[in-house]
Length: 521
Image (cartoon, rainbow, N blue to C red; front, side, top):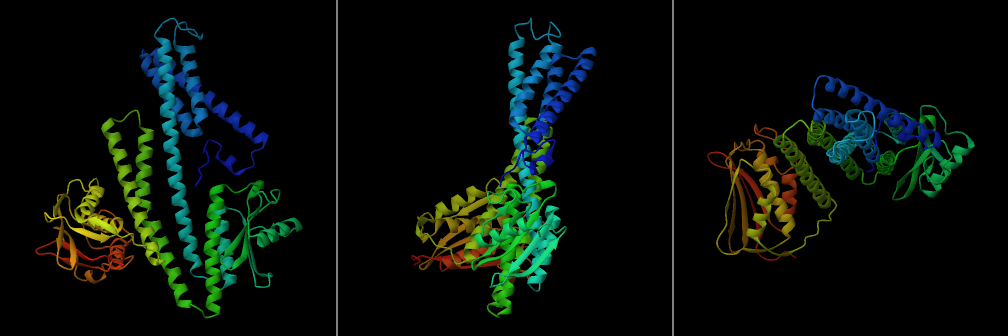
């Protein structure tokens, strides 16, 4: 996803970059830089009048440069601001005053250090801001996808589908929207317009027809009919083009790349829903399609709810660190960076589980069977979770003899990682987690045990069900999709093994899975 430079005139990013608009944007940047430098100079003069040291004056200019960089979000502008900060400081606060000369031989080094420090810190500020904007945009897209996906699930026919899609897209883009479906004879079957109908003149109809025939986006912001007022996205399925979505922003604006990608994702969902209705009318595979849509809604609902917490944590830590970078200690900075790393690591593991589960659902879980040592699998899994398991004691019990397995090492390691993560998430600090390996004549058994509070008996039969996270544990540190144990079961069964979970005595939980000692074909 591409993040555009966000500045003081954010609205300009949606408009064609004409010479007048570029000139206006440059003028606004110059005015902002001049105002900030003047304010820094006035404050610095007041501090000098009060007897403040020159170091405080340098810091005032550094703050102004950081503020300017945060508002403009442009690396080149930050370098220019750093240069002007040095020039203003030289002109007003070094002897001889009000000239660009400097009598003291130490000043050139001061100017150089001031320029380097201000440039470096402002670039870090811009980078953190862009990462924050990226996270915000992703969260916004997830929320919108969830909202639209939920409403699309309730459509009853193609007419209702056009109305729901048009209403949601018009609300999301704040634009006039056309949703139009075609029948098998390429005639318009359903047409719905939300807002002003600007899609009726001859030119717009030609562009709309071209998008339907070619199956490619046409209109404003594309290479085909770029002078059109609206942007037309075809709704494409495996059987061809089903319809067209037209979006006309106000003031002759065009969609950004991120908005086009979002519209492409929505058009895919609309196409799926439309085909589902066709299949329903023909009474072919109705139950399979309904189940697939329900699964998608569950996934979107869970993603919308559970990804918000780590993303908010990442954004909050990054924002606090950027806003107070010069005023907080190194220990606090390390703490914020550690929080960001831990949240990002959890998101990475979560995405990996989702991708693996998708492969399982689509029947594409291909086992890369190789000879692996059980001890190495356990060590790799523990090494993966040790940063998140600080404060916990992880013990191992492995026979002295080398136990070799014919398995997909990466997938079995993922199983152990999921089980260890569960033990960490659902037990109090200071708990002991034991990973043991035993070998019998026909199988190799792995067991992950903890001394936590255990699992309520009524939940035990449902622990391997998908989208059923543990609800009752008071030590739960994270919400989850309920995919971890379900994925573990799928992987173990794909290897021809078994997995089970039970409560330990007097308290705690034991998860045991066994793998056949012979090679799986």
